[in-house]
Structures are given as C-alpha cells and as structure tokens.
Image 1 (cartoon, rainbow, N blue to C red):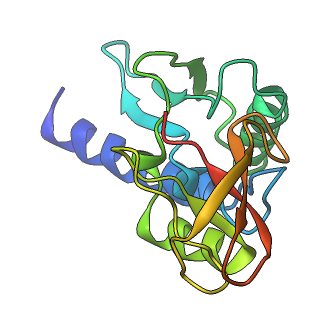
Image 2: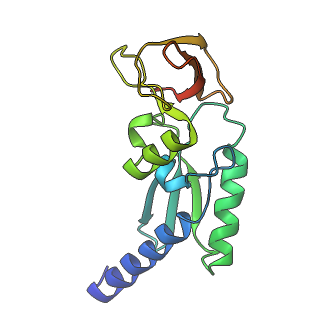
Length: 161
C-alpha cells in the first residue's frame, strides 16, 4: 500500500473507531461497545476493505445480534456501508478487555468486575470485599450475582472469563 493510501486507510479507520464509540451496549447502556471491549479490531485487509471484528462477551449472548445490528446501522449512517463485520470467537472475551472508562462507568452503574485468581470482587457501592456469590448468573449470562455482607446490597459482576 502506498503512503497516501496508508494515510487514507488510517484516517478512515479512526473515523470508524469514533463511529463505534457511539454504539451503546443494549443491556448496559452506560458503556459503548469499544469501552466494553467487544470491538476486537478495525483493520484494512489486503483487498483494501476495512473489517471490524466483534467478540461477544459470552457464548450465546442474546445481545450479540442486537450489537451487530446497531454497529451496522451506525456505520451505514456514517456513510461507511462498505465496512465488513466479522465475528471473532477466539480468544474469548475477557473482562480484562474493558477500558478504564468502561470500568468506571460500570462501577457507577452498580456492576463490579470479577477479578482473577479467586479474589472476591469489591462491592460497587461500599467497596467492601466481604461479599458472597449468590448466583452463577446475574441479570445476563455474562454476569454473576453477589451480595455484599457489609452494606447488604446485591450487585452483578462481569465474570472474568
């Protein structure tokens, strides 16, 4: 690819990323799909077409199709109707892919992030780690349900898959 073509592709990829930031998660509309980490890549293929890779947060996530439709609609509305969407299943989504702004927004919304290595999540309301898991699944399959033993409030956590 020539330098001017590479510059044009990079500019277009940046426009696509900005467009994707306008697409909110349908189940937790305080975060967009970029902050949620479901957008795996925006890249120009050898044929010059730009591909957007999307990874669902959970196998069988019912919001996957809704997210794809919202992404397609946003791209089409921005005049980017030639962008190809592809589903990326490997590696599987991980809560480690959440952006820092996404983590802050989720916590403010009352959703914690389950840490690795068996450590209990912090209650998003009082920050206590004196919590108990009361359900394998929370409001959606990608979340587990906890209760804080300190403030007694229930909360969901994104599972660290």
